[in-house]
Structure formats: C-alpha cells, structure tokens
Image 1 (cartoon, rainbow, N blue to C red):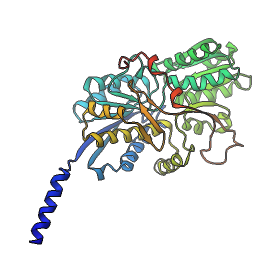
Image 2 (cartoon, helix red, strand yellow; image 1 turned 45 degrees about the horizontal axis):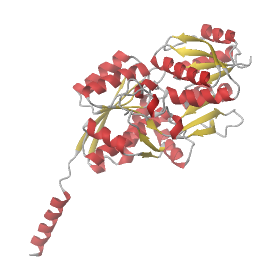
Image 3 (cartoon, one colour; image 1 turned 30 degrees about the vertical axis):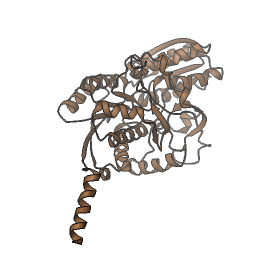
Image 4 (cartoon, rainbow, N blue to C red; image 1 turned 90 degrees about the horizontal axis):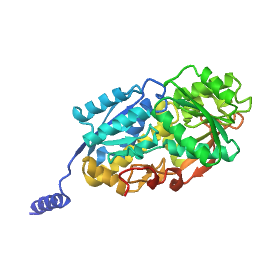
Length: 397
C-alpha cells in the first residue's frame, strides 16, 4: 500500500511539473578567421560563445546548443552564401559576431528575409540600427556613432580641432569617417581632407604623406585591425607624431596594442565597451578566456559571450527558438552579464551599455602583461549611443 501511494504521488508530481522538453539550438559564429580581423574575432569568438553556453548551464537546463563556425574572408558575397546555407540547409537559428560591416549588412538582410536572429558583435556601421534597421538584428558591442562621440569629442575638447582622415574604403570606414566628421564639425572643428585606402591595405605610405602634408593636428584612422596596426607603424617610420601631429585610432582593439607594443602605441586615445581589467568580474572571466586562447579577450569576443548569454536566457524564458518570440523577450528583458553589466536592447536593436575612454599607457606605466589601458572617463549608457529618435529606424514609433 505504501509503495502504491509513493508511485501515485510521484506520478502526480510529474504531471503537475509538466513534461521536461529538450530544446535544440544551433548557433553560427561567422567571422574573419584568417585575415586582418582574425585576432580580434576569429577563434576567440567561438571560444567566447562556448564559454557562454557553459556558464549559462544550457545542458543542465535541457537546452542542447550546437555551435558551427566559418570564415567569411571579409567578403559580403562569401558571408551571404554561408548565411543562406546555414539558415536553409543546416538548421542554424542565430548568427553571431560578423566583423566587417559590408559582410554584416549582407547577413543582416538575409536574416531578415529568413526570419532568423542576428546578434552582431564585430561590425560597427551605425546604419545597422539606423536607416537599415531590422526587427531580426541586435547590434551588441559598439558602433561608429559611439566611437566617434567618444574619441572624436575627447580630442577636439583638448584643442585638436583640425582633422584629416585616412579611411578604409568600404562600409565601415565610410561610416566611421562620416560619424566622426559630424562630431568634429559640430564642436567647431574643421576637416581638412580625407583619403581612402583599399581594404585590406598593406602600404599606407602615400596616404600618410598626404595626411602629413595637410598640416592637420589630427590624422583620424578610420580603419581597424591589421590596417590600423600597419598604418600606425608606418606613421612612426615617417616621424609623423614626432612632428607634432596626433594619430586618432578611431577603432583600436587590445590585440592591436599588443601587436604594436607600448613603445609605439603609448598615448593613443581610444573608445571601447570592454576591458579585461575593469573590475573583478571582467578579470575573472578574462583569465578563464586566456587559459583557452593565450590572449586577453577583445570587446568583440566579450560581446559574443554576452550576446549568446542573453539569447539563451530568452530561449529559456520562452521555451522557444522562434525568432519573433525570442527577439521580443530579448527586448523586453533588461540585459545583465558580468562583462557589460546592466543594459537593454532598444526597439531599433541597439544594445546600450556604458562605453569607456582609455589612454594607452607608456612602457614605464605598465605593471605587467596586458596592462595597457588607463581609464580616462566612463561614458554613461544613456549618452554613449545615438539617441533612439535620431537614427531613422522605421521600428521606432
């Protein structure tokens, strides 16, 4: 009789609790794995996604997550082909990362067409949540508007009010040049000219000589990754900074500073959304990342981690992988993670959080490996990104 009672009670408990349904999720990490952006995204972004799955405890919660990854070679056509195959044939539910704005914009449109989810960490063009916004995309880590308003405004405020731009000739470079130019001019500065270089570039000598001849107080580098590293190295060979002109690295990653060395990079002012040494939580996570990658994480890799975490939280809350359902939950629920702190995903898909203005330390100021940045200012979330009403996004009422 006791055994029968026990069996009945157990069965009743299972009925009341409801069936435990396993949810299968497939995510794709699409980025540069062999070119100028491989260090700042690449395999490190795949590692970051895997860490998010583990830290979330997906398996224990009945969410089976599979990761696939691919190299888009910084080419929009390659990115498009991979995204279509992933969505149409391979059952991918969401794509993450995608540095190179032209490639990201291509994936952005295919994701809208296929009604899936794209959480961008690596690309910067502010159009992604502006005039080309999509209900299927979240722009997580940074954008050209935030970079321009952080670094550009800081330098103009110090009296560096004449600029010449050296710009990567594709969507990202154009957007960064445009957004920084707007800040400089709004603050009373003057843009003396611009020159655009092929992407990716190798020899920047002729472009740097044009910028040097302009006499501008600031040469704004509207490029990133290996292009920025090579441009700064070649500028040093020409003695540009020794001649009194400043270099503004409008998008600098910690991996760039590591490649340059502090002797060359010291004094650069830059804007980022993440730094490994910000607080105890960023230090703890970055130490675990470094054990797997043998390098500190970039903000792009941190953004992939945080984006995957928020995505999985939405799947757990809704018990669904339906794109509309999950996206609605991601926008309705405040974001919270150990790397970016508290934030939100706005109606236009822009994820907002604090941004930080840093100065690169001199070799004498650095206390050890990867100790590269001095925090100059924290830019609060409510002013770090373009105001919601100013982007021209059709999703904003």
